[in-house]
Image (cartoon, rainbow, N blue to C red; front, side, top):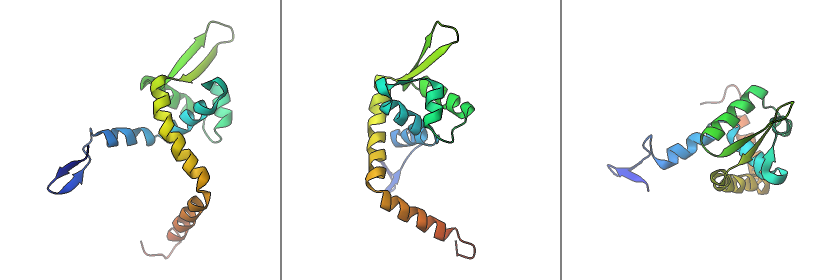
Length: 132
């Protein structure tokens, strides 16, 4: 529910929209959830995830997995074998969070031309000599 103060919309630091958007501030969180959503069985090993997410470092992947696990969006399964085997899977809470992410990703697929236009506009605005 939006909060109106002096006739203006306010998003307090502890408001639900701000808390939700904080999850999107970590670049890789939505990508990891998206990858697990589409993984066969929705369960994947860290190395498989890293190969499917071009550009993510092992350190960043493990940090992102740890944060998502702490928030209860994914679970970590450790198998008692040598060498160690670890898999990650979406929790029921993670699946409910991943559903709107999937809608956004689908919008991106359906509107690639709009994304290209936004990128062109941004590049033009970044050219030297343009007023800021």
